[in-house]
Length: 138
Image 1 (cartoon, rainbow, N blue to C red):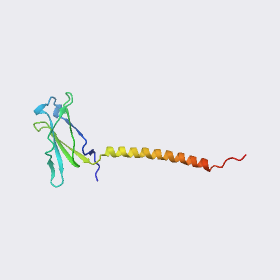
Image 2: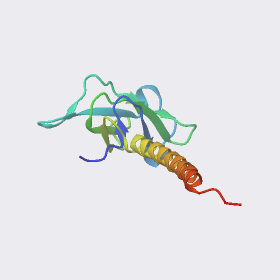
Image 3: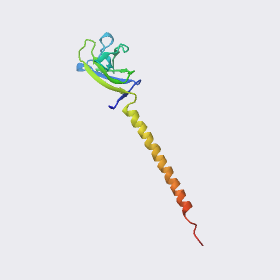
Image 4: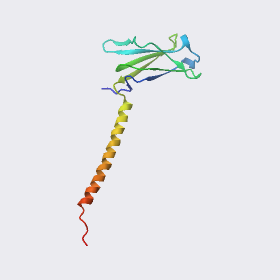
């Protein structure tokens, strides 16, 4: 099973740099992201449940941002471009029931609990040693 970088139902941020850092692309001229759904037989298929995402400019930088939330596991593709089709960029997002980041957080939690258990066991061993130590004779 390949690692999944994104989780079903969680937003995925999109970023797009317009050709020549073109600024001011809004409304019908705004860059868009076309969302494609994984299809197990014939490649990719446009997901009709996902309308194109309009990408909004960050300041006057020529950089545009948007979000989409996948509703299925698989290898999603997003095609971003200016409204006239120029400057096309294709991105791929691996989506699963979990993501690598959430698995890492769970491993960190388990590691923390293991450390706590080891500390408790050490304390118990010290108490057992104290009980096993015969009292000093006078």
